[in-house]
Image 1: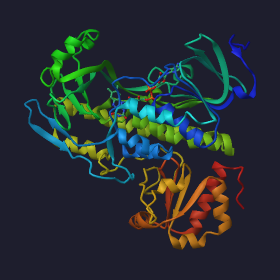
Image 2: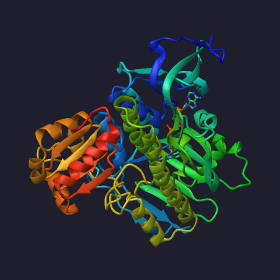
Image 3: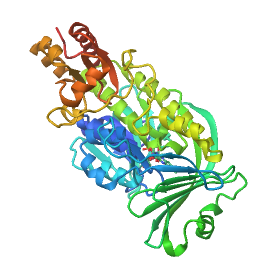
Image 4: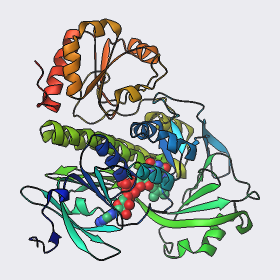
Length: 506
Ligand SMILES: Cc1cc2nc3c(=O)[nH]c(=O)nc-3n(C[C@H](O)[C@H](O)[C@H](O)COP(=O)(O)OP(=O)(O)OC[C@H]3O[C@@H](n4cnc5c(N)ncnc54)[C@H](O)[C@@H]3O)c2cc1C
């Protein structure tokens, strides 16, 4: 028995590098990225399968790029629909503003916006974990307690089918356990609250051929009760209704109340009501994202109103930003302080989206064309505009450092990330490539860097940046841009010594 009273088997098969609590979209992506690096992972979810709730309906090209990295893009893409556009109507039904549909791949190498049914995303991501010898999946397991002991983190879980309780030991425990995160509460991580507190009713329908709904997403403005309609995927359609503060929230999900509410658009003979839920939209970000062995990601670290479709996207970015750091600390001997840059960078980035989404909520009550266009541009949703820089962290403060890098195709036709892998990419022009010695390229290769000579779209990219080389991190954010071989080499030596002190570079 352990100090906590649960059955604790102290053998090496119960020791993990990382324990992931919660296997929603964020936990699922994180486990894939950790497994890709060969880390020993255990993941718990209290549910036997993916949650069938009316939640995420949109992802962007950056997220597809992460899915590409874990080798599942081909499996996911047929289940998505490229974003067809949106319109914003005023209270009289006049179109105030529109967003164009997406016509082809954007800077990320994928269309910059897709519609998605979140359970599809989660199923595909989980499918990547089933045959991984280094991932222990514990579904139908509720995590009851997490604690930190001197030499390990302890996760106490209960098998919900047998009632058996047991513990595992892990170097780090990552809470991907959603808004009510046990890990966050145990670690006493404080959430900053930006004040939003709005109840919304969210309903998914399966329509039949008698339904006559808009072909594109539509925002129906109203001073008190705006409505959002989403053309999800296949025959799935979504309505989201802002509820009045005085409404009886328990009654809101009664089917007759829902049919009454939706009667302007749909009749019962035109659709099947699939699922409905009331959510209170909040705007929250954790002030600190790691304490000792405890780390949070996804909704455990931040919650946003869904008006920009960025909650899950932000969580997947967390996973992409965290996994390589855990790999560097656990496998390459990097300092634990690297893990703190994760929260510093991601916190500021998530805050930007949450504040923008909250402002976006105001155009649902009083739509204004300029504001809508400016907000869309600010987050670069169509691949235009300039998405935000990360908070200060592991990158050079030059013109590109901390910004999302594009993914061009090389002259061979390959997408850049397929060549780089989930590693640091050192993209150089031919002149610089000739100046880097084979020994140096070999040494940085061992420290986790892949050197690629720019060709095709990558050569064009360097020319546009007026750079000779760029270093892009495994999460596809720029480390920095360089204009000569000597500076690049010095920077790579310094970076490699931080990330992989074990791999000595002469
Ligand atoms: C109406 C609505 C629309 C949205 N639209 C979008 C959108 O278009 N685009 C977008 O990007 N995002 C959207 N989101 C947000 C998105 O759904 C969430 O951000 C996303 O689900 C967060 O993923 P997560 O993995 O962090 O947490 P969750 O999805 O909440 O997953 C947490 C997992 O942890 C498990 N768990 C929790 N506690 C325990 C425990 N103690 N033991 C074991 N398991 C546990 C749960 O079973 C669950 O599987 C929307 C949300 C809502 C409500």
